[in-house]
Length: 316
Image (cartoon, rainbow, N blue to C red; front, side, top):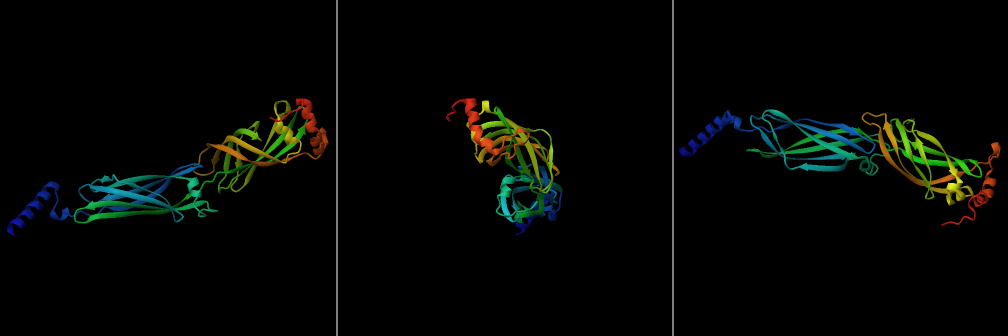
C-alpha cells in the first residue's frame, strides 16, 4: 500500500514540474461558448451568405483539442441544411478562439420551402452548433451554440410583355409598339438598367430591344417600358403575314439580360440573364387618322401586299 501511495505522489510531483501547477490545477475546466453571432456578409438577387462566428474560451493553462463540430440552419422552423467538421482544431491556453462558418443559401431553395415565406420580407432563422471535446476525468462533452435572427428576402422581379400594337402600316413595312412590364415584388425599390435582348416571335427574330437608361420601380409597384420596332416586309416572312392578317395569339421568347440593383444594403447592381417566353395578344388600330389603315383594311389587304412584294409566297 505504501508503494502505491508513493507512486501517486511521484506522479503528482512530475505533473506539477512539467506544467508548473499544483495537483488541483490538473483537473481541467470545461471550455465554454462565450458568444455566437450571425451576420449577412454578401447579398445578391440569387444568393445570400451568412457568417456564423462562435467564440470559445479555454480557461485552462494548457491547450485543448476540439475533436469535431457540427452545425445546422433552420428556416421558419424547417431544417434547410447541416454540415460537420471532423478535423477539429486546437484551443489556445487561457485564450478565446473564433470559429467562423460561412453559410451560402440560394434563394430558389429558400422560396421552395412550402408556404413558409408567403408574403414575408424577412426570413426567421435558427443556427445550431455542437462542439465536442474529450477531457480527462470528465470524458466526452458537447458545447451547444445557438443563435436566432432574421435576414432579408430578395425576390427577382417579374418581367412580361403586355401587348403589341400596330401603329403604322405601309407597303414596305410596319411600325409596332411593344409594351413591357416589370413588377417589383420586394419591399424596397429596384433599379433597372441595361435591359437588352433579342425578340423572337413565332420562331423568327424580329428585333433587338435595348433600354440603356435607368428606371426606378418602387416597392410593390409595376414599371412599364415602351419599345418601338420597325418590321421590314422585304426581310421577313410568314410571321409578319400571319401577324397582320388576323392572328390573335403570338408566341414569343426573349433571350437577353438586365442590370438590376436595389435600395437595400449590400445589394449592388448586377447583370442577370433573362429568358422570357409566353404568349401575347395583338392589338390593331381602329382608326384611319393620319393615313393609318383601319383594322379591316389591314386584314383585307396585307396578304395581297405581301404577295405583291414576295410573289406567290409558299410556306417552307
